Amino acid sequence: MVDERPLSARLILVTMVLAMVLLVSVLLGLTFGSSDQGGGELLRAFMGTGKTHSLASVIVWRIRLPRVILAATVGATLSLGGLVFQALLRNPLAEPYILGISGGSAVGAITGMLLGFSPFPGMALSAFGGSMLILFLVVGLVAGQTTLGRDSLLLGGVMMNAFCGAIIMSLISITQTSEVHQILFWLMGDLSMCSTERLPVLIAVLPCFTIIFTLARPMNLLLAGRESAAALGVNVRLVSMLLLAVTTFMVSLVVCQSGLIGFVGLIVPHVLRLLLGSDHRLLTPACILGGGAYLILCDLLARTLPTTGEMPVGIVTALVGAPLFILLLWRARR
Amino acid sequence: MTSWVVTARGLSLSYNGRPPVLCDLDLRVASGEFFMIIGPNGSGKTSLLRLLAGLIAPEAGQVEILAKPLTSWPRRHLAQRLAVVPQQLPQDFPFTVAETVLMGRAPHLGLLDVEGESDRELARAAMHFTDVTRLADRRLDQLSEGERQRVVIARALCQEPEILMLDEPTSSLDPAHQIQIMDLLSRLRAERGVTVIMVSHDLNLAALYGDRLLLIDRGRTVLCGSPAEVLTAERLSVCYGCTILVDTHGLGGLPRVTPLPASYGGHVVPAEEPSGRRGS
Image (cartoon, rainbow over all chains, first blue to last red; front, side, top):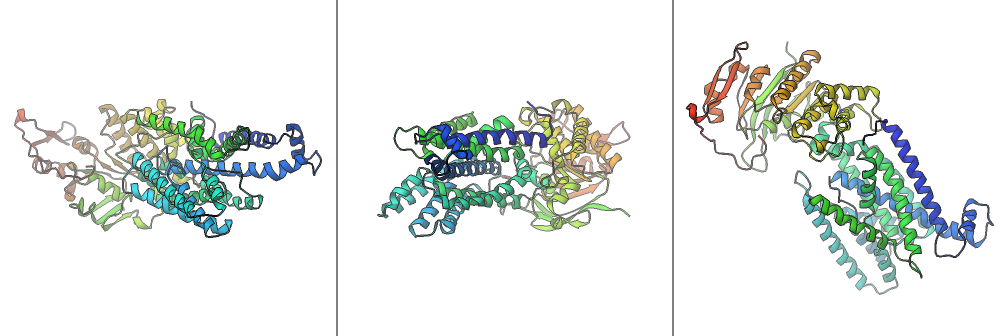
């Protein structure tokens, strides 16, 4: 299956189709939920044709829209993060959550929370520090090998996750305030705690997306190995460092807002790669749009499946993602 | 006056305190020359090529490419002038042959540029040159070793380099494709003035195609000169540790190298295999 059309044409097509998918997801996310307002009325409120101060308008504008925006941003960031790690480590199973990067960010964020840091920039910075630390530990563990070993990388990530989990539990056990409940929900990956005022912080992921998109071709070349990429003119050290720093930064930024949501960075890039091939110039925008849509839909399930209340979206993504991870691992071993 | 496109002085290299892989090695390659590096397994041929291409840094010594120290070349500018065909090819590279060859244009494009029609035309010509056109839509992991080798050479051609460095490009090819690739390299040199630097195990190909040969053993230069100067029975027998017969071809008096089997009186003195050395 080879597409003969030039890249720019394919890029426009892919972007348009996935933007439609994202738009439909957004509308679905706005329309359905635990409130018993009719979907039509909510949609009218969204389009601005309903009464401006009706209950429907409040639900759509004040409650659901911020949440949908949050879900889209988190989904896009985690998917793109997965894509970058998979290219850099040449390992299809790499993902911020599995590598322990999210866990490190959680340790940093919770520490910040308990120390009474403001959500931004205090907590974001402590989360970034935590995830950078884990990143160096995990990558350092397998550094020096010419190809980063799949197993040692995964084992390193698992151990980092276990270690971060232990630190988080110990932090919880010495905490006696009401923050415990908040931390617990946050560990499960929860989009319901984010306040509207904190949303503008997420704009900081946009320059990160841009940087990653401009490095899409070097990422293609890196798949052939570091020396091959260097021979084709890639400044391997600079590109890898930039990608790692930018990705870790944006992942820790969203982890601060959403908690630990796993496997998004695994499933979205993988499905898109099956559909579109391996060119990162297509996969980067596709992961942003598709990842956003995916997490909106997962969040919709998390809000509507339980008969009372809602469950954290991290549970939905893990229920979908973990079996897929096992399948990929099994296929890689064959 | 000869213009030297690649100059190396006093190159030394060792991996993690093991015995040195290369030791105080000098070489100069002239513009448009077909320069071949030969030597037994573990003599440091591959390491030397990687040093010359700037893929690893030497412990001591300096490499100059086109009269400019390697260290002062920005990677992308270097890749516009110098292409490398590595010995080890990616096994699991998830792109088609056409996409892989087109990647040779990468150093000529800005970060956000997209390959245009002229780039595609160059890629098509390169694929035609190396006889991989019919494989264009296949993925790299579906090819044989020899086919992958030709694809990587096509990618290097697509880079339009002035200097082409290759590490045993013919080692997994059948005779027809060996000759095809070697003829292609000499045509590149004749028609476009490309300088070719090639590591080879095949002493007869070296005799047939090389302008000058550099024979190295245990990281040191044994001799650098024309095939007739370098390929002598005595020198090769000592270097490779087996009985080697060198006689003259019917073809223009070029040396012909034959390692002698025991049944013809040959014997092997295996050099102590240097443990843990990488590559050859």
